[in-house]
Amino acid sequence: QVQLVESGGGLVQPGGSLRLSCAASGTIFSMGWYRQAPGKEREFVATVSWSGGWTRYADSVMGRFTISRDNAKNTVSLQMNSLNSQDTAVYYCNANNQYWGKGTLVTVAS
Image 1 (cartoon, rainbow, N blue to C red):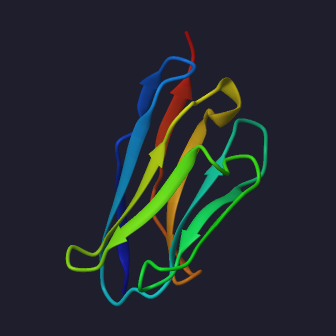
Image 2: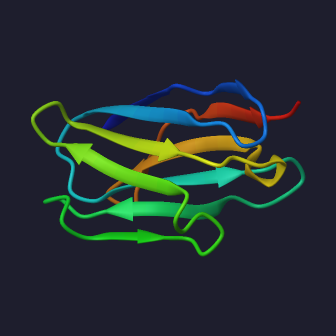
């Protein structure tokens, strides 16, 4: 059984940065981040391969967000820069396209 715990969410001003982390237990292959804004469906944000050598991003975050993973610690991180109000959402960690964390809230507001 895989368990995921996210951390790092909070309130940030437009243009600011946040770093999300996800700690995983169990056997992990692919890892990624999704988000769900109020009144909207959950959407893909970014994913990273097991080796960390391959990444993919949603067009809306390309160039602003960076996903990375540390297999020794079984963690995946999401560095978010140049945040704007449209990035406000609950961010969820995903593993193996199957398991989900409980989410961490990111609010971008002045």
